[in-house]
Image (cartoon, rainbow, N blue to C red; front, side, top):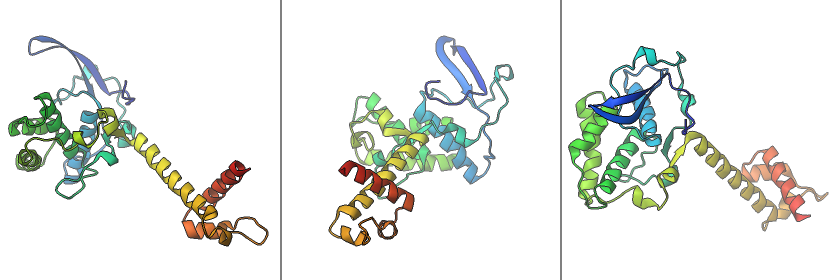
Length: 249
């Protein structure tokens, strides 16, 4: 699959839908977890939101797929879906002064409204509340309808009060692919940012105003003092000192 997801437990093609020929496929996974709790709803909806952000999902089927279309019986855990996308942290704006970093259902519903505004002709174009609510009820599981209505109403009211202007899409000229990021991409990005921060701390220590304080009488670097000053591990400090010395020579 283009999204680099694991093999679906179920996979088949829709030949017709409401009497019309369509080019659609059903994919379904067996996922480990008990969902009939508040945490369970969050867990399940998070996965559904990530699927909706990653793939051009048209509909979530509310009935089990046909058993004859089952490909295999393997039950997946969440870590198998690291290539599903969610909002990239740097593109997440605050909503009423708060950050909703981990609520992928919230961000998918906001993006749904914004793409609806876009499809209706751009900023200023009205989106009906019931369309948002229908989308939420069709795709997600809620404790009850009032919970779904409250979540959708909170989001819808925000856009109505601002004349149906963009919140996420105006944040950047980036494409949807750049606004969204997989967990693996996020892990690599976070690791790079952490490495860059550590390298900068070490280089600043050995090239700054107080660099001599980090040298022994022999002229070699006092790694222990650099570790204490920067909070970077001994191995990483040694690595960046070695790189610095090699580049200097």
